[in-house]
Length: 265
Image (cartoon, rainbow, N blue to C red):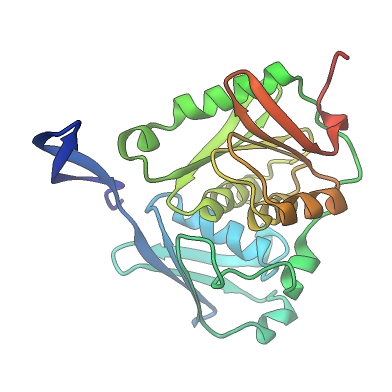
């Protein structure tokens, strides 16, 4: 596997003091996905759990509907290719661009909810299968932060985890927030892990893109240490997803669908 971190000589200035030292820098690598030999998309990512990320991405974009629709998948790590063979390509695939470039940042290169694949794959959460107390939320966020070793070393990645009231089940990190969630989704699809009773705990802002990714995964609840956006909250209300943000310093905000947070008042 390619290196996730490198060391680089830097000059650090602290309160006027100049120091020559080393710093840990996170790496990023392009990965091009080919579907049935046709180049589909190039993703820039942290070089681990690449296969899971591609599976999760293809499912969340509606290219496949379930893991067993993939007949074969293999990674050429050195060359930066992931090859996927399937005979179940969603017919909307032909309407997508033949090649799209996705950066590690959010922006116009990412498709929004106005695109048909989002409308088709975002799941509406009508049930309440997961309930957490505020103390659960604080504990789960602390567990995520304590497990975020690469972030602690570099400050350059986002972290996400699948969890339930008992604790973290599966955690992933990436330079791209959406990539971290795709790595979780792909692992769950590949291993038949149900989303019932599960939540996502997340290190970054709850944007509309992230909220839709959670809906596509099939989780009813997202916890974040950061803020949501207005569009994310509108989508959360429409899709029945509980959003909890600003989980820090023994404080949190419940923005939508509060029935999944157990309150004593």
